[in-house]
Image (cartoon, rainbow, N blue to C red; front, side, top):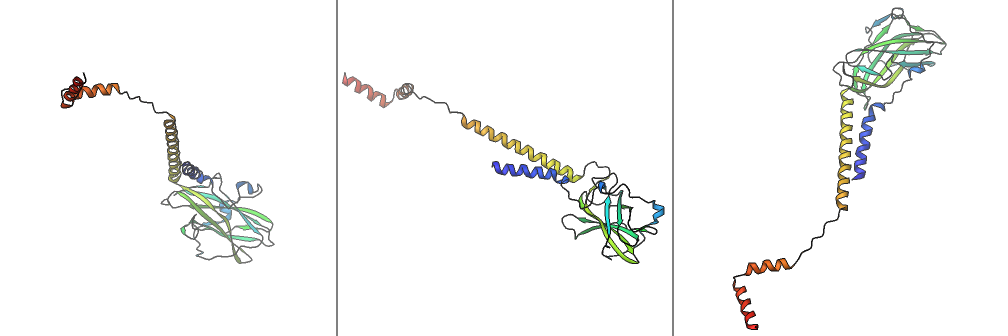
Length: 257
């Protein structure tokens, strides 16, 4: 019983800690060098989601590295139905300049990345380029469906570009985000896990208390009860008084005399 209760308690701790054990395959905010420049949206020629690339997939170009930053949102919390901004950074170590065509993203289940939940907007660019041996940062704005259930999901961000009129694409983010309800400080999942963990801890405490009480009862000795015979004999004589057994006993005593 003790080992079973310990396993339950350990499971509760894991459940409580699960929101903090997310593995994100993206460099942190500190990985973006201070020398990177964020160009103005007008200069970049952002055209919104007018372009449609369908299911086209291209290979990444050699010498092009990407990073990702969620400005002022290191926890990567996305409010359902509200606009979220991220920055896609590119470093061009190649010999030719590249032209950024568009940025797109999609939402998937964490337990099965093959299941697509939502295709986010495709943000196109008309005048965005990265010269050789330079780096630049491009903003991307997306909105997760307001009907999406709060919880942890995988976000895949892809930037599409061309070099010498040949299309390429690179995944600049492939990690976990937490979707929360609008106006809610904590997600429904987080509240449920905290409540469940607290309930398990209370049950574990009650079980320990019951075990201590059982041990204390067993250590107490039962009081000894002495049974006398004289009182029982007197009560038996009163019970038999006036019966045939009493009369025969008195006759026998007279004959002995």
